[in-house]
Amino acid sequence: MNQQNKLAGRIDYGIILSLMLLCIISLISIYSAQLTNEQYDANFVIKQAIWWVISSFAIVVVMQFDYEKLTKWAYYFYALGIAMLIFVLLFGTEIKGAKSWIEIPFLGSLQPSEIVKVIMIIVLAKVIMEHNKRYQLHTVGRDFVLLGKIIGVMIPPMILIMLQPDLGTTLVFIAVTAGMILISGITWKIIVPLYTSIAAIGVTAIWMVIYHQDWLLKLGFKSYQFDRITTWINPESDPQGGGYQVLRAMTAIGSGQVTGNGAGYNAIAIPENHNDFIFTVIGGNFGFVGASLLLILYFLLIYQIIRVALDVKIPFYSYICTGVVMMIMFHVLENVGMNIGLLPITGIPLPFISYGGSALLGNMMAVGLVLGIRFNYQKSMFTIKEQEFAE
Image (cartoon, rainbow, N blue to C red; front, side, top):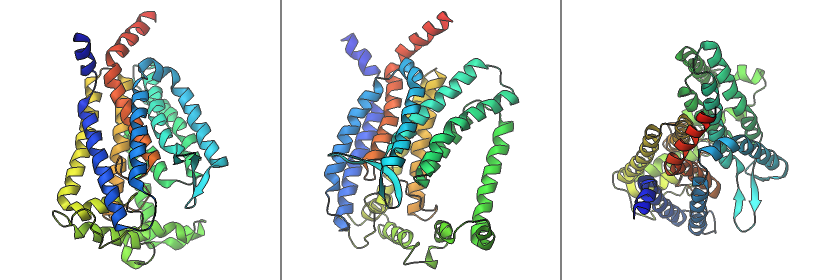
């Protein structure tokens, strides 16, 4: 009985319950999306249910990686991730202009970059941990070295993903890295000027796209590269082209009003509404109430991951939790933002809800890391004490 109680105490049932609720919402939303859209013949509900089963097994596997295994194999995982990204560039399947997928028999397409996101979180956590362990006294010079290490690790996979090209995943990499830099211990004397400069560059770029495209054209940019920004700022300028998706999405969400039109409401069909635009289905069918409940569920999941980060006394684990939080939070903010017209369309799916086996697998593996942290915490503390004693 005591053994069972100890095992039960190592399992975070709150996170598991959140995942179960997200699974139910995902399958209902995808089913509703198929009722409103005859764009595809495939039964996406069945396929997504299969990926939920596969991803659940993946969580169990990831949970077996304790502190010792994660820190020991981190750079091997990194090498595997780089190899997968190179492989997909050489032999991958091109879909909608992006060479990001590998065909898996019976399962369909797998996007390696989704798994590499999880690998990057582990590797960045190890880089930060090793540096801070070696240099316990922070100086500006040492913090610049740590920043260089973090960026140096991030650049190779990010370049390979940009070559596919995959803007959405590239932005996720940047968001995860930015979040982990914030808690790495790097002084604000570096972080504030760095982040301020990046924000200024972004605002300037948007300003030039809106008012001075001729300058950018002289620098070698192409006019079609500005479309996402111009249609984001003013979708009505091209209602049948670049602005079509955004305008339809906002109309569909607005039609749901407070309580929604009910599952299967099909007055406003939107391309890809089972995937990147699944939030329009939730907003249209279940209204402000349904959309708000989903966002609250995300908040609870993120809160529970933050709680794990605060409960454990191992910096490596806290860094991993931070990376997972940043990954999930950026996905939610960007996807919901682009569905309601606040952010440009980037092709980022709504985590755990949108149809897509690769994205679901990557997100579940990331949460599996957090569940593994809770599950292996006591064993990890013992391992760390042994290592400190040996040193």
